[in-house]
Amino acid sequence: MIQKKICILGAAGVGKTSLTAQFVFSKFSEKYLSSMGVKIDRKTVDVDGKQVNLMLWDIHGEEKYKKIPTSYLRGASGIMMVIDGTRPATLEMAQEILQRVETELGTIPHIYLLNKSDLTDAWSINDDDMQMLKNTGNPVFLTSAKTGDNVEASFLHLATALVTA
Image (tube, rainbow, N blue to C red; front, side, top):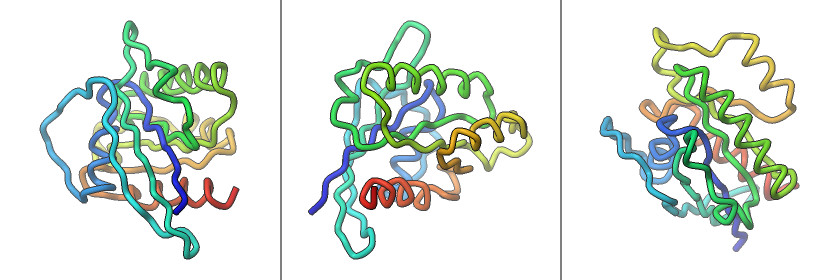
């Protein structure tokens, strides 16, 4: 069986834990629980007839004075960079995190998840920012951990990219 470590990164409160729970357990909770350190879940998926065991490292949200330890990222095959579509500052934080990861570990395949797409009235990521993300050449998914929209598709997309690369 193929094993791939995927790190789920982003600012605090963007929905990393909720996205992981939706993907692994098909569950969503309105309760906000701040992750402490790292929580590891596993899910086996089928990619082109191959069984792939995804080790999902849900790493605590980065804040100004609470950086993600590089040791959590070692051995990662891919990264899911989560951005809260209702808080534009999380886009800037995602770019900073990704830049630091690439400086420390080199380029790692990644995708962007613009989460909370169900909150249309509060949506704050503009078209220019969306285009900027798309121009990186990395896939961009509008997701909702609450409704499940594009959650499975985004995880499977990254898994497929990692297996076929």
